[in-house]
Image (cartoon, rainbow, N blue to C red; front, side, top):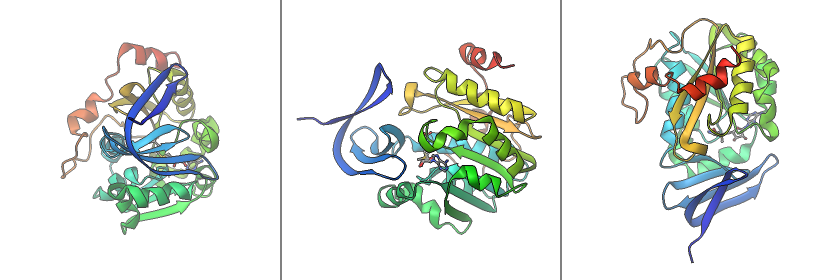
Length: 276
Ligand code: SAM
C-alpha cells in the first residue's frame, strides 16, 4: 500500500509526494513540524503542512535568496537572516568570500534541531566560524540592531503564525533602520500564480520604505506552482547590477541567471505595477 503526503497549496489543489518513511512529527511551540523521506525529492521538511525544503531542490531557493544581494552589494560583510532555521540560506551566506559574519535569527529552535538531525548539508552552516545562530523573534531582533547590517534576508514561512508581522510595512521600516546607509533587504514573497496578494503586500510595503524596489523570480519544483518570487528593497545599489562574481560554481545561480531573474512575465508586472 503506497503512502502519499499531500501539501494543500490552495484549498483546491494538492501537491502529493510518495513517501517512504516518516522521520519526525511534532507540535513545536510555534508550528507543526514534520520530516519525511520522499521518493522524488529525498528528505522533506514541512511546517504546518507546507513544504519548506527538500534534499533535491533546496539549492535553487537558497542560492537565489542570497546571491542576488550578495553579488550586487559592493561590500556584503554583515548579513542577517530572519527565519531560515534549516540552515540553507546561512550556508550560502557564510561561503561567500566577502561576508564576514552571517547571523541567523530563527524563532523555533525545533527547526534548527530537525535540520541538525536530518539535513546535514544545510545544518553544516551552523558550525561555520562566520556564523552566529540566535533563537529569537526576528521582529524584536531587528529593532535591537540599528544601522548594523549590509544585507537582511527574510527567509520566513508564509504569512501565518509568527511570520504574519514579517510581511508588514512596520517590519520593513524596522529592517530599513537595521540596515546600513547602503543596505539591501530581500524577502521571499511567494508564488505569482497563487499568492498575488502576498506579492502586492510585500512589494507595496517595501516600496513605501525603500527608494528602490524590484522583484525577481526562480523556478522551484516543490513550491506552489513551481514559480517563486523574491522582493528586494535597496537603499542605494541596483540589485540587477552584478558587482561580485562567484569564484565557485553553484547549481542554479549564474551571472546570467542573476540578470534574467528580473525579467518578469506580463502577468507578474501587472501584479506589482498596480502599486506603481
Ligand atoms: N524557504 C521556506 C519558505 O520559503 O517557506 C522558509 C524556510 S524556513 C524553515 C522558515 C522559518 O521562518 C521557520 O523555521 C519559522 O520558524 C521561521 N520564522 C517564522 N516567523 C519568524 C519570526 N518572527 N522570527 C524568526 N523566525 C521566524
